[in-house]
Image 1 (cartoon, one colour):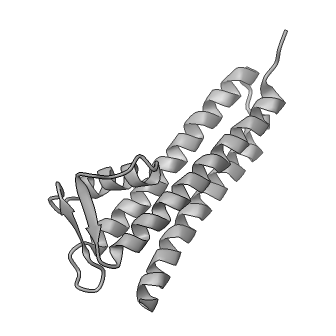
Image 2 (cartoon, rainbow, N blue to C red; image 1 turned 90 degrees about the horizontal axis):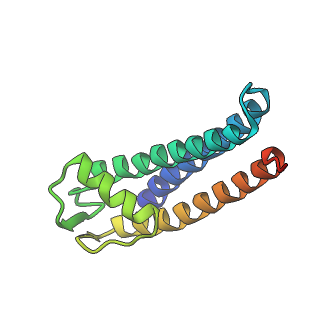
Length: 141
């Protein structure tokens, strides 16, 4: 149980740090860009999407590595043990879309729940970031 808690903590911390760094870099570099103001927002959206995809793959890699170990549990259903299936499961969990065709068992369930909460928080953080950036760069005539 303690090892599972530590593993989950490492995965979540990595995802949060990736997100923090992505938003920090965009905040630092967007004012220096020599593009129209509205394109800065578009670049911010794409930067945030890229950060989310990287974070989802971090969770996917954790699922892939933890799957079928006695200690962690397993993923069951429409899951063949591939990294791409782990990524699919991670995308549906991170976005809180929900899962149905792949079901977690064992301690792996805790990482699934934590990923859903983490995804919700990071997506909300992105929305707040983009709102602030739009306030800076959204020009009306």
